[in-house]
Length: 297
Image (cartoon, rainbow, N blue to C red):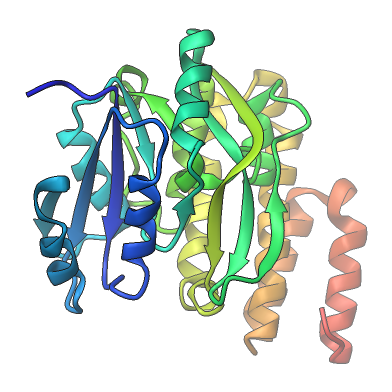
């Protein structure tokens, strides 16, 4: 059996409504030296049947439901390619995605991982935005921890050298909601990142998924900051890190307030103020005033 250049890893859980589109986008790739590993994470819908109809064109791993990170890690463990790319089942690629990224990785061997600018669509296919390349990739660890969107496109856009990935222990399944960010931080601390400005990736924004997982995302974002603080430059492990943490707390205070939990929202604002009174004092005061007076935030 020939070893493929690229291993494409797709976690799949109850995704019968969308997985054919994702897999069809792989079949349409102009670069064809890749294997597709689908990890069925305990699906209870028609996903297993749809995968079976694809025959031996896929490597399918089935496991009890353990979450997206565990599914991706199972795919990583099975990967044979020199390069690893991820594609979530509700997203899809345009035909030149793999070709462009492989060409970049071949031309710039010091690049450890890359991604592509990404188009954002609603579930019905309407374009709702763009996730572009960062203006700069300098000081990337700090940029990722400060904004969580510095790696364009997220997981469905990233390609990484398997040797680099092996040294990072993959996705941390304990960080529910920030596993991607956490891995990008660790990759950025170890290697150079590059971004392709052509929008070869399409990410679906699902209306209900964020609200269902918001508390897990909040905890994961805070844990990610705590865990990766030592990877920041020494000069940014103090005030900068505290400001990053305050930003997360302020953001989720707004969501908690919108969800009707004003007490928890105000507690987050108090924590944010204690962490970064100079950089976030005005923001915290304006949010608290809005919450006390019942205004929309």
